[in-house]
Length: 160
Length: 160
DNA sequence: CTAGATGCAAACAGTTTGCAACGCC
DNA sequence: GGCGTTGCAAACTGTTTGCATCTAG
Image (cartoon, rainbow over all chains, first blue to last red; front, side, top):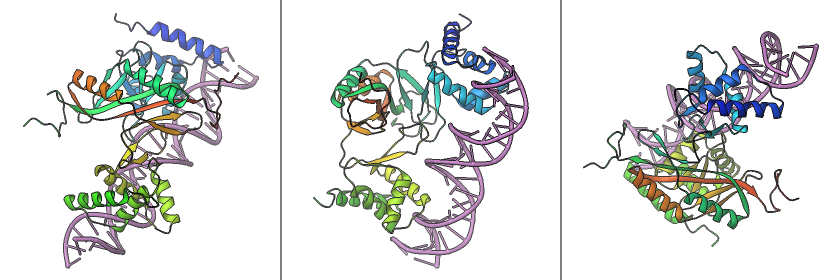
């Protein structure tokens, strides 16, 4: 398991998507996809981080291309876009290989963890019926404070 | 019930907050607060909307002041800040007079409705224990498509 | 070839900031 | 009167766009 096991699958999916849509198979698109799926399953990143990494690896590309490609990947269902903080950069994460999950975020150290609670679907269903609305997706983020000693930047701890 | 019943309460709360923090009781702060609480309970607004309204009523103020004041109100717990869309402006809503609730948003007409499902607290509690984290607050937004005929801009409807 | 993609830089929107003028305490 | 607030405009950040250049099909 040196190579990420999903690369083959997502590459195929990108192939198909580009095919169907009549888009082109550019080097940038495949390189970016590979980079995204080279990391561990639950890696979060933003547009400029991604660009940095690729440039450091010797692959030059512009921000415009990064944004274009990320948007295309979202459309293809290959990644998800998140908007956690206020005016901070949008975060992206892989969809393939990371099951459905929501996020919990530490306000002190900024760390993002994931959890999956099936009850959110019950809520979705109830509200869906209530409002006669087809729910396409949801965003659930819990904000809080770690009580672990690992948490850097902690200010509001109640250790006394 | 011509006047909003909460104005008195929130004014008092602002008084106390400013008092405790040693901040000043400026006209801007009270005028903005009054404007916010003059609308119906579940009104959403953004910074420039708020400024527009006040200027149209003859009260001139700068964006800087609007942002400063909104931040102060958030700190005082008088309003809540939301970030629904991608790079759209932050939305604000009153806290006093609108109970705890979450939001459901129609992707077609952009309408935002509110709901309250107590089960979200059960999830909060579970995840809180699971991750040893004190949850301060959460954000739950359901995105979907109205099935009502009222929905403008509907594209993806399945009416056939 | 040629339409679609890219790179670059300029444009953009929302928000923040620096500094002089103002006004609450 | 002095310091917190405001106004203004300029700075900033993340993202988008226009246009010339390039390249996959």
